[in-house]
Image 1 (spheres, protein in one colour):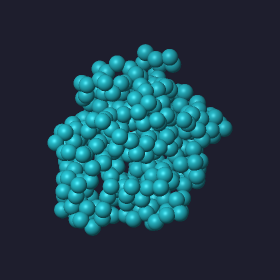
Image 2 (cartoon, rainbow, N blue to C red):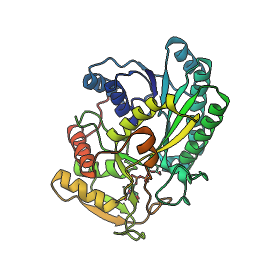
Image 3 (tube, rainbow, N blue to C red):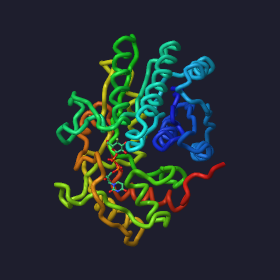
Image 4 (tube, rainbow, N blue to C red):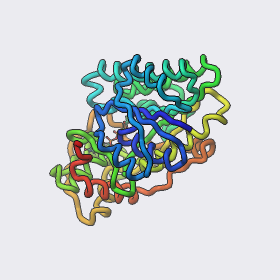
Length: 340
Ligand code: UFG
């Protein structure tokens, strides 16, 4: 298939581009490079041995999006593009609603006009909100999220469901990611947060490489085995494979829309993750315990049964693989991707 990957220069997008190419698909990337460096693309081309066409377009611009679809033919869209920082979304809700919703609406309009009938969407476990029982199951229906970022995911899932119900032939897979970490085993592409990392794994990696003094563990008084929060970390390579599996499953879907959890089904604590990273690095890493972070839930992980059975997909890589690959990427690229 010829696949348009929105946000294809970003962390999960770039790994998915490689998986799609390795599976024999053609890929076109659209990215506005607001949170990704153009140098990612050269790395993707070197790793895949293929040319990766790129359009530097902001998808909130409906006219430019339409023109892209006028000039290129796509069999499918994998939609990653969007703002994704939970804390920032609380401070700038309008920017999040405007960006994440407008870009999705432009894409959906262009897909409708050009009869593109396959869509895979980058959703998040955050749609389960505070009250869903753990492990999270796709059968849980009371979706909500405590942050504007998460709420854009809930709203976009709803918009896509409504559009699919009204569009003969459109098939949509909503992929609810748990906590993606890790990097390509080559060490050539990985997560490259701008500024101080919000997320645990890139923060630990930057402590290990000497860019940050110490990790602050956000609370050790939760009702969990070691008192720190537990999350379902999955390797970004497994996640990328999940997108290929979902894309290839769309044509055999019996309902227009289907949500799939992409996770391992196992929770790992903050301290367990830190200690796993220490094993990868071969030394202890400095940390302190600080107060809880507002909005954090104590523990959640996926029930991945649906993705296992319907997509034939399973997360294969271990926590030690995730840490080893992140460390290889961080060591080879201590400051992330080059500017040029
Ligand atoms: N943590 C620390 N110190 C840090 C960073 C994180 O102790 O410096 C802890 C957090 O408190 C949490 C755990 O590490 O317990 C994981 O935190 P992340 O920020 O890495 O991940 P979250 O589970 O908070 O966020 C993820 C995704 C979001 C998504 C959210 C809810 O990054 O996109 O899950 O599903 F919205």
